[in-house]
Length: 367
Image (cartoon, rainbow, N blue to C red; front, top):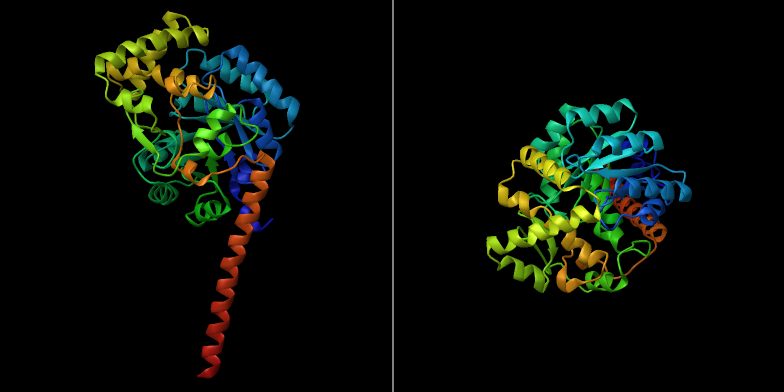
């Protein structure tokens, strides 16, 4: 493998390839996570939708399939986050990733235990704050990314963040092949993180009929909406999503209350604990009461599609890159292909530079 692909992210995480599979709720199970790590990247378990017991078993299943490093994605506003961190420490998990900014206390506890801390950010100032708080790396996700996403395109966000911090930056949002990996490295990133591309692999636990919906989509079939939980979220523009956008705020809030109750039962969270988590979310993320009530919508609507296969009553989070994907490889095939494509792109660039050098020498000799 070309030396340019062996970045400091590989050294930090103890992996062979600078490629990360993001921790997607309802998607990133033990099979996908283990397959990614075994193939040389970093697989990350999506734990936000798992109970503590389910997370324990998921970690054990990953470790039974691979001896290579993997990560766990955490929600810092969960009432049992301390117990989850303790579980990761006991289990020897290598990486903790976060969709939201972890607290200073959580970062310190993870770092003291030797666990790499890597939150996802969507703005330069967030990256600067996270570095100041002591994280080891950041995933900079641009507007093209799936699920909750920021307003700045990847091509503008990544160079900004690279210039602002000294820790490794992982580029996310719009990546699916080796050309994208080389482009990210050219911007100064140390690797790429992908969600949709890994969702559309054979090891992904998403129902095949749902995968077919993604494969049939074009790059213009996604939209960013606040109608699901009050935050910008990129999803496929299904009939349900368009109907949600047309609902009154009161109708959305009533639906969200029902989903909050269902989510508490599913994750074995008491009503008191759910309220406590909600208040923590409201304080940390400066949410309005309507936004807080709607927060339960996203996991339950996503579960309806990605677990139960009911598109008519669920949502399909996705990056725009879904429009470039038309098949379902194994994870091993995918990563092998990305490396081959990246090496080919680097070879082309090297050849172009060599031709320029030759032409320069010929011009000098003609003088």
